[in-house]
Image (cartoon, rainbow, N blue to C red; front, top):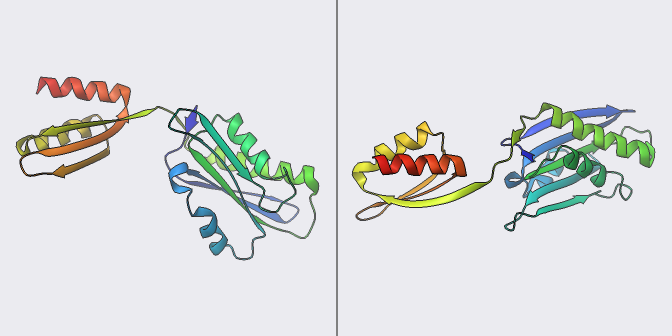
Length: 187
């Protein structure tokens, strides 16, 4: 399985119809369809397809044709995401009608081609499950903990300065977490 960590945009054009595909991490999906409609008021459709892992590690998929003929937009987009084994991503395609009807088959190929364009541009990473780890430290150990976290490239860090201690919560892969715990016991 693969994923992305940032957004990418690609474009595909056929018979003067323009397809602008946006591939984003699933965390950026909420509200994006409305935002794209606002940015592209003359666009006829904003189609989406998404795949993500739920809390039970099951792949959840969904798609919408956004008033295109049934099965001609969302499903072809979703099929490309499946073929690339992408998870925790959302794909939104803005379509500007060029005046020539593409037919259902032509439309399905056009949407799939737009998705392939943006996937080719994307910086795709191997998906690694992340775990949350909580621990406490003294105020005097804050710099040491930050140094170790930066050295291991663990950047998803939250901390709270409480009365007599610092409470930490980090999110990273199991491999980095094991390495971090080993370095903690040494210091």
